[in-house]
Length: 415
Image (cartoon, rainbow, N blue to C red):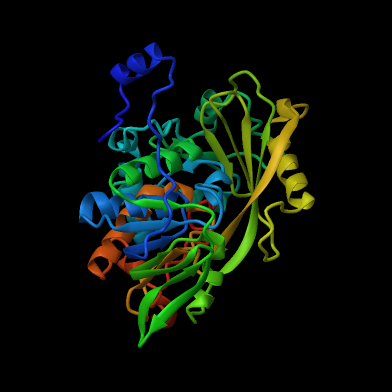
């Protein structure tokens, strides 16, 4: 890998006043034709390009992005990584992602700041206790780590928490391998690694139409002209249904704003991720001290990236209920992402009836944590025109065969 980051390169460039670092990635003009055009330069799209080039040897690839690299949902999330999903199909897919996360910084030669500080899912009722313990047992059966924490163990782990609020905490599941990663670094790391394998990353290049002929893909019309392609892979998050409509495909998706907010920096107070389904809020603390707080989706459909004040108010009420000592902490900023949700709260990672056209979408609120696993299986699907066994259950065909994977409410908070 050229321009490899190392202690030696850090010292060498420091001696030259850091003026000779190479570009992390290039911004080329598109070529006339590619083997694969990937629509969407977020984490999933860039990961797909990287694994296509690295594992499958396909390097004549363009990743086209309507805005800037990593400027969509990759930059608009709360960075949580976990794999403790209930159903076998979901658990195995997310566990593959977790395994890739654990070696990702070394693989990409880029620090993605993956911090395995653990993810705690609180149980507030007897029914939640039963459901949580069932999920832990299912996780262990699938080789996913998980354990039950008593009230006293929770108090020892998170001294700030109020266990006896209006929503008393009866226990929690805990996945020690879970945690958080730096979202920008993930996009930048995959972009840099893909670029060094010959992938063209083309920003400010919106797709306006998908051309097809005789049931097969011809290419895409973009803001920079027509780009011919043997295969087109769409990874456009909340706008996937818009892109699908260009090809005459109707996807079973709804797009909703999903909100988050971050506080002013405070001293270290929370050393894990705490999530509550009953009050639908979750919190962690960043390396620089910000409290990163997440909410549920807004109930209305839309493509706005602001969200509603009602959701913000409800979320902060829930956080103060669980952490009364945070009541006077000030919020610095708030943002919203656009999530696309399938009826069974599981993604579509599939080829379509149009030869050479593939979709990776419908991740809902679980997209960031799946980033490397999603790219890994999608690259396999594109390269071989057949799904990998891990993503075969997530074919678009399931919506008329009835083989749905219902993760709605099954895996604690759906983030």
